[in-house]
Amino acid sequence: MNQTILEKRMDYYQPEETMNFKQSHTLLYTFQYENAYAHLVTTMGGNVAGGSVMQTNFDTGLTVPVDHELTKKHVLFYDDIGQPYREVGKIVFCYPNGETIEISLEECANCLTGIQIIDYKPHGKVTIR
Figure 1: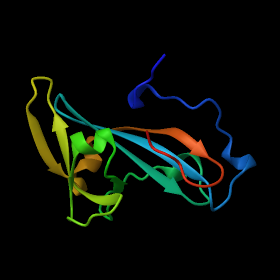
Figure 2: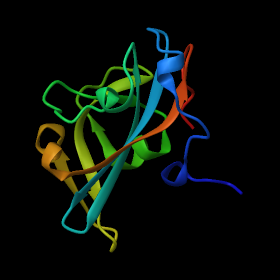
Figure 3: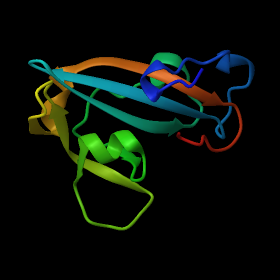
Figure 4: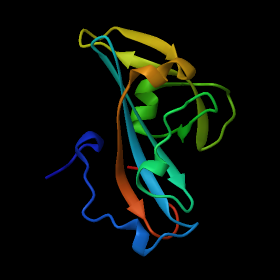
């Protein structure tokens, strides 16, 4: 069965057994404004686990992988620097009828409806698919 990123679940999660500064979590953020949705995927590294990984205050910026399918659909970047990870400027919400609305990242905390850890690697980098 071929899972989409929105259906992805981890097979096992017990970071306390392997907690270290080289670990990495992949996070899926879901936002809703009216009946429009947006999704972002990003990574968080360091000696943290569970809820400590989940950023909910977006006034300091959030970086996402430029080439990810959800980034291409839901992100307008803050800058135009050619890096593999870039800072989110605005989030693009998609309505069921195909229309979109752009909301600045700083204003999106109140639109956050879900955060899910979708991948965990105890050592090294996570590959976001």
